[in-house]
Image (cartoon, rainbow, N blue to C red; front, side):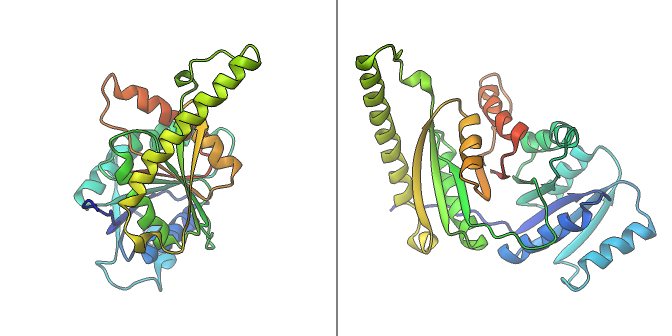
Length: 285
């Protein structure tokens, strides 16, 4: 078995605003800190007032009196820049961002903040579409299995996430572009050829994923039902649609690379996920 590097969230940062979702966002972050035995950094971009300070103190009261366990930071400036810079300063391993999918608001929120943070953050980013005050069980995780240099590490990290969240099922999805089939279905003969090519491609992708799974430590796979699924269609859109159809609780994707001309191709794939947000999405770095 080859040496593997299992990712751990030692410091979790959440950016908060004084909106109706403030309590839910902070509660979600505190639960993540419990799951991963992490430190929590709460960042508010805006003016610090006694009323706001007391509000946050009340929300985190009883969670931890350890000043090193929970830190509240107040800064003014551009929300994207402040969150990214603070995450670097605090060596955060995960940035959490919460939003409620309301018409207009979600599109603006994702377009103006989450997309930019996802592209430029040095660490993983978790996007919550329905932050909740109460615990929401995470039973099923869908993970991208696309052929990419980052995929093996993303899959390995996903198993640690699954163990920490008590996940029962993990599905690795291999997205295959329809262009790889290169068959125009016009009659029964071309349909048969199309079907055979798809089966061969699916078997090839499944074998590649099985090799990756061999490197996942057995203790991380314990108690988790593991599936792999090949799907044909537009990359990014297909896996997002699949996650929605199977009612996955979390979708885990590779992080985009620093933007270059060629990397924009991958960013375009991720745009489908960010524009739809079929479920909570973890962009793994």
